[in-house]
Length: 212
Length: 212
DNA sequence: TCGCACAACCGTTTTTTCACCCATTTTTTG
DNA sequence: CAAAAAATGGGTGAAAAAACGGTTGTGCGA
Image (cartoon, rainbow over all chains, first blue to last red; front, side, top):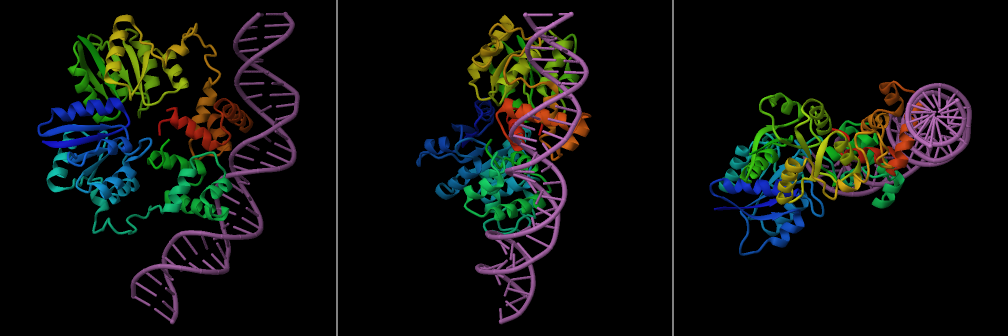
């Protein structure tokens, strides 16, 4: 029996997915959690899941943070990202933090089953979403995996850009000069191919870079 | 047997919810659709569902549009809105267009079951999300149901506000003067209690007023 | 050690956004 | 019908955002 944990903030999806997986041969849902923190609280060292199906956008503790924590504290647990969106940046962020696969919420149940089986047997599941990101890359190192790689400062700024604060106020929050913030903005305009602050916010939301 | 149709754009949720509902006594999922248009295409006059569980944010044809269409073309079909968010405005919009109930995606399966049963037997399911909106109101009439009632022009503007267009360009798109657009903006700033365009966009997205 | 790339920083100019003031017309309502 | 409310269009000025052209310092590899 392969032990599965489900982490997603929508009860209905969690419960019904639990039923669906429970019907599959060889799989047993042992943990359900509404966010990363709830998952961690339920983990017991002598009774860990083999696989975690992890949503990305969640309150309290999101999928990226939780995957990172699992990699450090329970590296034997294999995380599969379960996301609503198809986006290079978020795929890379999850893989870099230790996810073994990345599938969409509108995949067929059969693909989900195959992903869980492969991850359990081979340790990874590389579908067409993941493969292009793996071409001779070492995910452990900080390499420029993608032209659209956003660095830490830019990411923090991007999240602030989704608020009503002015750039000046964002600069204060981040502890850098207003001009530096302008630089982040200009860099992101180029990388993300947008030209307004609304464009930034929409991008961040669409790519689950912010918790709304 | 109560015949149920599921309309949601995420295959996994649809399939697993279908399994969950199928396990309940008296309920049978006869239609699954990824959006309103798919639902309509599958409807046959001699074999209609009793209940439709309707997601709100969907591509092609969203939950509000689809509910409105069903009310006009198949008033016997009872729609229950199934949403991710708890928000007065979207609750009212769904009810005004004919929905018989409104439940959240993170409710317990038991509440879903109760909602379906009540809607089928009594014609409506009013939980704590809906009741406050019904106090002596006639939803058929265009009444000021709420202080935060957005009119049609403002709603169209609000959707444009989630793009990279300037107000001038939005005015051209809407075929009104730039000043009128300013008026829409100022009215929404007050009603929605925001003060920047990013605030508008975030509100619209958070409340599923736009299809991202 | 010499560039090279890149992040952080700075200043200026133009465009857009926002906050006030207002008038006119249409619709709603008592 | 008359009064009230809502929708539309308008102007000005201050603030913010965006486009542009720069400098400096640091790390890294050829």
